[in-house]
Each structure stands twice: as C-alpha cells, then as structure tokens.
Image (cartoon, rainbow, N blue to C red; front, side, top):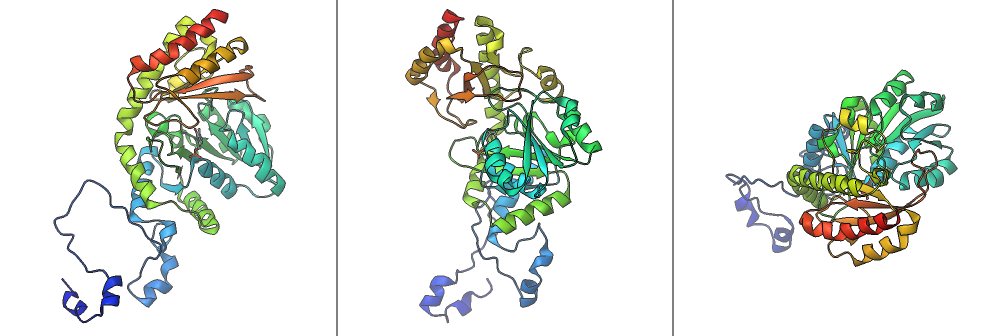
Length: 396
Ligand SMILES: *Cc1c(COP(=O)(O)O)cnc(C)c1O
C-alpha cells in the first residue's frame, strides 16, 4: 500500500488526523456505504480551480451530493423513467422547490383544491406576498383547465389522487392543454409511488414524491424527491438548491435506499388489504361514503383504471356529522391503529381530517377519516374498523 511507510515518520497528532489507507479489495457488500462529507478534496490545484466544470452531476461539495445520495437519486430516476432526480429534505420541500424554481413575480400557478394542504398555505402566505399568485381549481377539471390558463400561468400543479378526498385527475388531458400553451406541469405522486403511476410517461415535467411515505416506509425519516423529464429542468432545480443551501443527510438517504428494497412487497400487501376493506365497508354503508379509486363511485375511477397499475394502502371514509362523536371515541379506543398524520409506514394509522373544499364536487364538509393500512394482521385491523362501520350504519 502506497504511503504506509512514510506514515511512521509523521507525528502522533498528524496520525490522528490522517487516516491509514486500508484495502477495499475483495470487499463487496450488498449495502450502499453511507458517504458523509462536507469537503470534497481535489487532486490538483487545477482540478480545484475548475471544479465548476464538473457540472450538476459532478462532486464538488457534500451539500450538493455524495455517492450515497446519487445512488438514491439514480434509483428513483429509473423507476420514474425520468432523466434526473434531486433529493430535498421533505415532501413539502419538493413541492416548494419546484414552485420557487419555476415562478417569478407576476407569474401564477394553478393548484388543485385537493393538494396536500400546506401547498395552498405556501401559495397564500409565502408566494402571494412576493407577487406570485395562485388559483385553486376543481381536481376533476380535466381539459377544461384551458379556461384557467391565462398569460400569467407558468405551472399547473396536480396531485392524483387528491389528498383525503381521493379524486383521480385526468393528467393526460391537463398535460395536453398545458403543452399547447407552453405551461409546465408538476405532479405529486406520493400516493401511487412510481410503482403504480409514472407521471413523466404522461408528459408531466416534474414528478414529486414524499419519500417520507412508502419509499422510506418506516415512519422514521423525512425526505422528498423531484424527478424531471429534461436536463435543463434539473440544472434549474440544482441552481435553486445551491442558492438556498439545501441538501439531504446521506444517513437518511441510506435509510431510504433500504426502504426502497422492500417497497414493492409492502405496497402490494397494503394495497390488497385497503382495497378489500374499502369494498367491505362500501357494501355495508352507502358506497358514497367510501373514497377509494377502485370504487366506481369515487371521482376519476375511470382514469385510475386507465393510468394506474394498482392502488396503495390509503383511502378515506366520510364520517356523517351525526356519527362524529361516536367515531371519535372509537378512534381513541382503537387497539392496533394509531392516530396520526403521515402514512406509508409499517404501522396502520387513522387521521381524522377536517375538509373545507373550495372548488370540488365532493360537497362533504366536516370530518373525513383517512385510513392508512400498514403491515399488521388484517384481522386485527378489521377489529378496529368494524365498530366504526357499525356506528355509521346505525345513523345512516
Ligand atoms: C406527506 C405528503 C407530503 C409531504 O411530505 P413530507 O415529507 O411530510 O413533507 C406531500 N404530498 C403528499 C401527497 C403527502 O402525503
């Protein structure tokens, strides 16, 4: 090994800092090493002076990527069938970074009424005071979005199915209209993951995932990803990230890589149980109370059949006002389900959501129970759900 002998001439304080080189030969593991770094070192002063020429795919500083984070980016890029992916600290950050990259003062963005709620909060309280406006649209609008695209619109945001109310959007129709007007389209694909829907293959420009959910899969980290269809969009996103000084921890990226390895099995299981429960509940109650794309009564069911490769493990149940108090007690009494936001982990969750739709066809105002199926035995899960169904059946 080069340099081993010289090291004996270095003093102890130096030897504490300079690591010995050990052989990597013959070491080949199935896991990806966690490369932590701030500084990246260069062979020569010339290399250092020219570091910008390494471009958005090169290594120049730990914040902008390590082999660990690049491996995760490449894995997601392949699944999304895109050209590049960037990692950001949360799913919400993935959405805001796209908006901040595309929009300038005077521009506007269209967001569905059913977008992940902090998105409209960001538009109202961050973008609007900075001269960027937004308009909320009915998620079932399809090609009629044409009428909302004036000369200020630069981006149409989509989320399919919609958070909590589960409408599947006609992404193809929205993309077709946006393309003719030179407007970009972004899609929050967190519910489906790239295993069940591939937005870029429909002509979407930015596909966003909250890796926090199914891909991380264990409720122990936060991360988001943005996958793009064009290198130019990747360069623009990287510029935004560099200027804000945002990156992700390689330790968290390694955990996401581990979660990704089991995602297909977890998702298939959660999807099967959720579908079975949704159908069982719909057969006991009015089917209109159950919101799951597999049900013909859920808006956009036909688009789900056309575009998706299955369903994940999250669906919703409308709680009639007269049953709210009884259901609230039953949620607290649940033995297996926990009460909490987020989803996509191994633990099943109940999230009672208050909805106040502005532009949606689902007219219910009040509580909608979002149900996220985890990996516990479905017979134990049903014992928590059945009394809720009974309580609603009594009043409905
Ligand atoms: C959870 C979620 C997000 C935000 O992800 P975080 O990592 O929690 O910020 C965005 N979109 C959807 C659809 C989500 O469910």
